[in-house]
Amino acid sequence: MMAWITSRIAGPIAGGLALILAIALTVVMVSKNATIGELREQLATTARERDNAKADLVQCRANRITLEDATARQNAAVDAAKVAGDARAAALAKVADQAKATAAAANARASAILNRKGSTCDDANGLIMGEVR
Image (tube, rainbow, N blue to C red; front, side, top):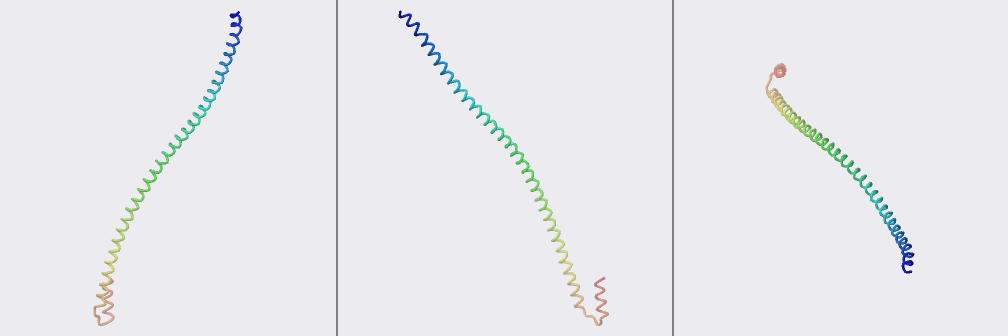
């Protein structure tokens, strides 16, 4: 009789345990699938952020190169302008020195004319004309 009871009870107990185990496995699988879905979303988001960061880096490098080239051109233009300015300043100083020398010579000639004594207007006119020629 004991065998009969055992065989009658063992079947439903085993079935119940199998059902509980199946439900537990289903819950675990659904939970893990949800976790895997979340991880895939995080991976996709991270990949987009990485791709955006790479694009930003490429743009940043291009901008840096453009800026360095522009800075080099500007520095070269400033250097050229400085050389040209120095040359102009030197040329102007030379012209100014020549003008001063010419003015001093003209003043000296004028003083010499004024200091000469002439007896008549014709003598003074002759002196002036001699200086002009």
